[in-house]
Length: 203
Image (cartoon, rainbow, N blue to C red; front, side):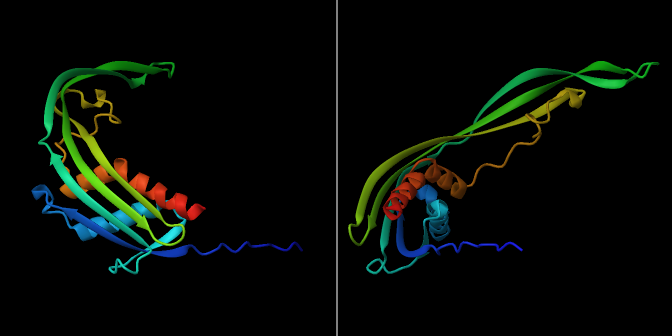
């Protein structure tokens, strides 16, 4: 009878981190910055090298991260409408020999494309205490277009429309400010901060 060998995985090192988020942007008044802070930690922990423990005391924290959010903008959605005609061959039955018989169905529809232009300027200061320690300061100018497409005013046989592309037939809800802020953060800033922490503790 064989003997199964199980390798014990070393537990991740617990590292305390204090995070300060600051902004004077009126558009961010509705954002719960405490929730945003926890989402920042979740993103920073994606590399799975250490287990980050959020603490309030900056003096005792091993990592101190300051993020200032400036020039946050989310413009009203820009709308573009185009009329398109769709055609598709579908099986309508079989002939006397059992072979499939196809027919062409058509439909026309308005394709509505919505684009929300967003941007923010992030000022970051990351300090890892200890020996040798590490300091990383960088500003991130993040721009992101949020695109949505839906169809309306369908005339003809709706089965002619490609459901994988034009499945939405109602205007989407406008993105929440919280979601826009996180998307802008994820585009470059949080990924870079995550790499800076990982490179330090990987050594």
